[in-house]
Length: 201
Image 1 (cartoon, rainbow, N blue to C red):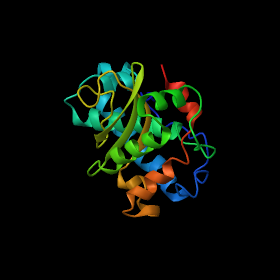
Image 2: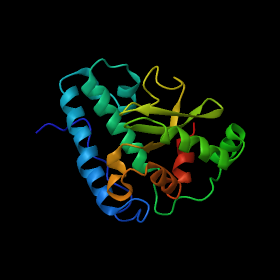
Image 3: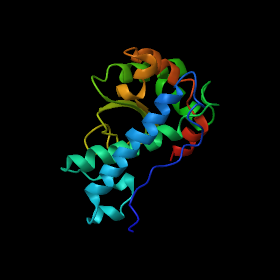
């Protein structure tokens, strides 16, 4: 039996821990079915190729003409980051380095929230909203489908993703139906600022 290149990461909290902001059923389906399927498809797409030995970040940074690698590699990277920056004890105002960077880049936390919400809200169809470190400041962008800022030519190529918000309907539809804005507002109650700080380079 051959070990697969990538496997589903365990969540650092239970499926019901993010209630009422993200419901138990959504978390369970999102993690065990959606994320798991991206990993299965990615492993199948890279099996027997040199990409088997790369990290998921390295796979995303190489421009891939293979849609299976691009879509499923992005799906695995994006969801892994998403789970990590959520916490039942999250929310509130940012602390530490990220607080300073938000103030210097956007003027205030409120301005950041407004800009991030707008980017996530106005992403047409399925995609993600992102907060990225670009050298000594922060930038906000959004991506279609499972693309992410590590992929060349998508956002700023210097981007280090700090926060990613999944705005695919599968991320919120059971609880919020078509009210994406309510889901985005709820997300701010779950951000794990300590984890975001750990991502700053």
